[in-house]
Length: 304
Image (cartoon, rainbow, N blue to C red; front, top):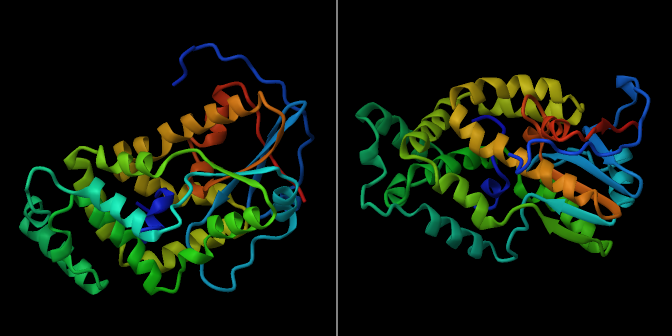
């Protein structure tokens, strides 16, 4: 998988009614591409509520500036920050939750689930990235896939403490803003833990396949994000989504639908909310914006 990995990777590192009512939104004229806020920012609003949709990057290198301009103004003008999850203050709590969710209950070792060729590639990849594969033998494959999604980026200089969520959370708390979450840690872990074994193995093998090009690939993604180009982000994501469509349905599409309904419901209460989720959720087919459109709710890119 290239981009649409849930927030907790770096820490351990659909309607009931088919006829939704269309929400009344404020009409806005089209704006020139050059005047749009970068990184990309969207707005959903009615008479007394504004919800900003901002796509985040969970790990960044030092020197990447993004929390300024229109993004900063929208954040400063918001009463509340809403993230995918609120991380526990104690990293050990997160690690313990992950280990509990990932434990294989059938007693089968991880390596024995792989073909001889896949096993060799897996063990070599783990060793090359400083991850003792023997320590993962009691876990299900998704845990190793997660580790291999994060550890190489850390070796390349990307840091979770510089990720957008960390920056936004610190700024919100310093300003006395309310901080909320769309999901719990247990829910996010459950998306992987609930995957059929076949899909877990596909996830692990797809992660290994993507390791050689991770540096250049992730750098391109960061570039598209900084430039506020969700279309290019979506193009980069397509290959990985096509390779693991069932995983994309669980990690992206279903969650995007849930979050769109959250936005719809939140519009019933006045206020201004800065909603920050992984950038992959706001790009491409099935995005949060697409799900909102299906609910009759318009979203618009924000200009400077």
